[in-house]
Length: 358
Ligand SMILES: Cc1ncc(COP(=O)(O)O)c(C=O)c1O
Image 1 (cartoon, helix red, strand yellow):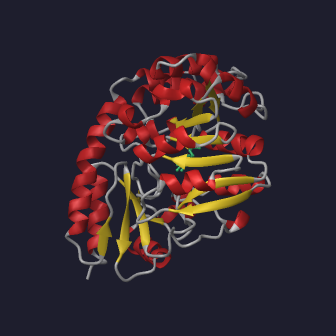
Image 2 (tube, protein in one colour):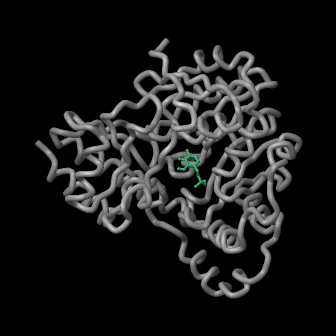
């Protein structure tokens, strides 16, 4: 068993992105892990062309066209899909509906599971990773009698897939315990289908799989997330949904983005190549140790610096923003997370890191 991590209650969560600092200082944002290609051109063109009607008309409260597009994209019946204003909305619905007395969360991971569960009034059992690896047996043991388990594959902030362990947990945990499996970054790993649980969703009545167009299709500002689960579970999950929760621009951009079949394969090719390039280049520096990752971001250990101070100094001197990971429960203060971007931006990041090397 690893060292116990005590949950910090409702003071646990902070994020990267240009608004985590003075936005004027940021020239290259390597703290937000979104598709390096950004938003598909067709999605931008659609909202520009239809801006007037999208702005003045009420959107479809049920997001039917978006659900239809997602249904085609995933090969899943529409009834199994729920859309939210970002994946974050669904995380909060899940916690509010299912996190009654105790939930289980590996640590470190995305902080909003912990925060949403606290806000829902549940106690949180944090289960430490070992060298960033998930222990299925420990999660299964702790999940006994728990209301819910949160899993993230690939994990944030590590970028590591734990597909085998995730499957074992889902197959072993009692069906009375609900599981939220966050796959928001899975479309940016090399082989998403081989690692996703979406193909097996019909086997598990207690499983909610979470995805997001904000990461995969670069729609962070518009906010489009969705979940895939059994319709009976979905009815409970969306009990707190407000009408028009996904705005018209988000729905229209989501439909247009999903129609661009080349966007994701292209992005995956860039991520694979640039992740290796960045990782190998950082490895040559003395003061930084990059970690293995399967996703479009990875951890870098600072040999002799505090991560919050380093983030601030790097930004001030170079305009490059990285994610300080000291705010993740169980991470300590030696790591930053960097997003894999296009070559031009990656070169700027490398130059910035070089100027702090030695
Ligand atoms: C693992 C993970 N899940 C979900 C989200 C929220 O995604 P969205 O922007 O779709 O709300 C984030 C955002 O950073 C994340 O890192």
